[in-house]
Image (tube, rainbow, N blue to C red; front, side, top):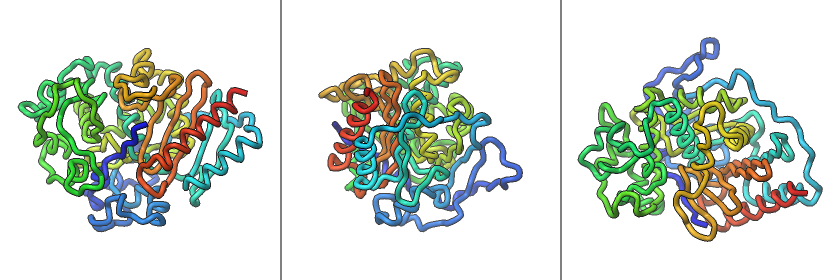
Length: 392
């Protein structure tokens, strides 16, 4: 299975962005926040943090980066206790939690909690960062914008919503090709290379009237015909978020409050970082309770009502791109054998959805490395163990 890391540059944000902090006594549903602990720009790239720093900051990202926060859902979805797993399965889950430096694991079956435990000093009232798990949220907002009529069709050209991309490598690319990362635009997602596109895209100087993603996209070139080649590009999820924002006239956080947070019944609201222009970053950087990652998975498995078009997740969560050996990529969702799909982020964040067993596995972590088979393979094994136990 191909392991992909979210944009390192997605964390190159303005720790001192000029937004107003709202007092608890008068919070609107969505409000801008400023970090309480400004850190130098050189410290804002997560891959340079040591383990102890990550362990702490992953649970406190809103203290270090600007963004938008939302209130919880007015009606929180109850997650009642379900039948605990057998002792052998619990032991395997406990061992995974400890050995993989996980901050929390929650397993739902039939909407009930069959396992919930925490590590790294994290707990049920905290919010943990998502990294590329956010991509699947942005995809869900794309579906909502289609249902609401803000976006006419997945076949629409990107330039219909982002006219600044006319005459660039993205001219002639469709919204669907952005959603599947098959634009054919040349891109370097090498996190070890400080000169790579992914390391530089959010360091580009802001331009009035456009997001940093659009500014950076205007300099890129084409390497293949649109629709012919899959290359993982965090920039393209950022552009997808910009498309949703342009079409709806709302920030991603504001639209998510209406279309995800409230209907899914989130208990802890949502924090979503912004770039240097004050735009939410579609490909990264939202923070939730572990239980709300699980609620997201349950809501998606049930069809995302009333926000999503009928059958949206059957398509978004199926392989639009075949990556081999039963794995694939949908509309910003990873697909696995046996009709399983899910969201993934670096350092071990994931939501795995098993519709045939009405099963959701949500994990938040701080792996010692951003992405590696050394950690990804045990996660697949653990989920397989859960599926076997859930079938009993």
